[in-house]
Every structure is written in C-alpha cells, then in structure tokens.
Length: 150
Image (cartoon, rainbow, N blue to C red; front, side, top):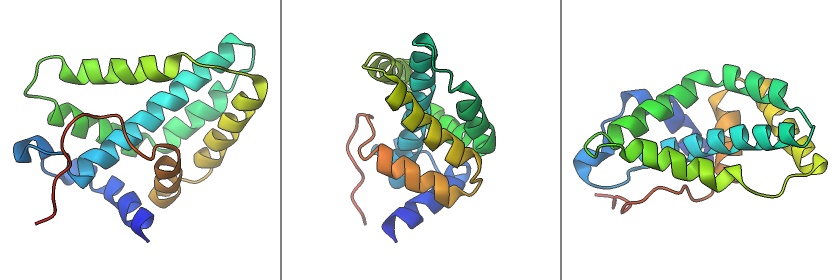
C-alpha cells in the first residue's frame, strides 16, 4: 500500500510545492529523484547495451514515450528544487550519468533491462511505473535531509 501511495505521488509532482523552500527532501522530491534516477539508469543501460551490440533502444524509447509526462514532471520538480544553486541540477544529473554510465554489461543483463522497458511501455499507468521505480531505486542518490513529518 505504501508503494501504491508513492506511485500516486508521481501524478502530483507537477502540482507540488518546492521542497527547497522547506529546506528538506520531502516525499515528492524523493519520488522525483527516484524517477529521474530510474530514467538515467535505463538510458545508460540502453547506451551500454548498444555498445556491445545488443540494441534495446526500441523498448527504452517506447517506455520513455509512454511515461513521458511522469519523467518530465520529475525533471521539472528537481530543476525547481535545485534552482537556488547555480548548476546544482546539472551536477546532480552528471553524477547520475556517471554512476550508471560505467559498469558491467552483458547480453543477459541487456535482455533483462529490455524486458523491464517493454513491460513499462505496455503499461501506461502510473502505478505500474511507480512499482518498478520503487523496486529498482530503493534509495535515490540525492543529497539533503529528509523532511520530518509534522
């Protein structure tokens, strides 16, 4: 149930207040960070797989098209969150790219990620995306203190 609630939070990303004004990482910001990190991971894996001759780009691109609104909302939320510090968003995105850009890649690994991408491409609901994102990115790599509940 907790994951379903977090998945539903993906829908409201574009309507939420900036957590930076609160000085902490709220649930929406953490959800946006997970979603953005998942997108970066999938893009990097797609590129690494293509480099070894396994092209999973069709599944990756279909997934991106199916869930474009959620990915775009996460990006907007994070840009707003980092807005007060020049280049902070770019540095954050670069760290994620570097994290997932290197690593072991083999055909079996590529096929696994291709299956994830194709399954998400065929499942347009936010609940399906949220379930996968929260399973694959348990702790997003974003710095800051987590907000305490009032």
